[in-house]
Length: 178
Image (tube, rainbow, N blue to C red; front, top):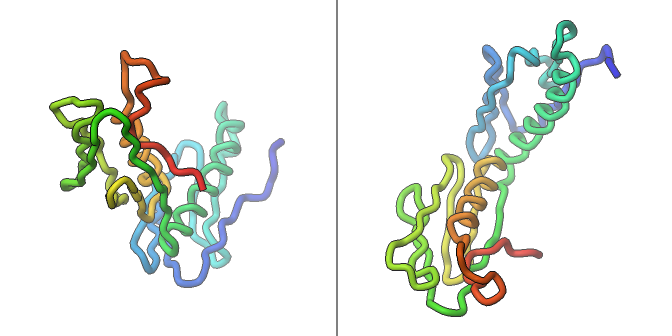
């Protein structure tokens, strides 16, 4: 299970990478993603061929470090993809009982009139994500996969209806399947 080779993540053209004290800063045409490595498990350095992700070789956490190596390398690949192409999640607002509206104010999404509630429900927008609302269509996009998916999940969770029958109260905001 233990291999002697380190995982090297290649750096595509048009992307600059800066590694300092376990913090990797990836810059591209759309913006900058920053990711911090767990220095107890991984040693990260920049080489000519790419970013070298090396797990620790001694101690109790060797197996966990090898798993972290693969996961961290995949996160770096996603960050590099995000600064050149944006990640996007499309959602749809559905209501049957009361006309529900969504509006974006600053770093929050306000869900108004969900099943006739007077107070709006509030979902947070993560730092590297943006939300657009056009009628019933909701678009969550940004350069960070983590931020985009967490923002979409925040909106979905805020629309969850409790203490009602799921079969008849299907109002809410759902992920659009393509």
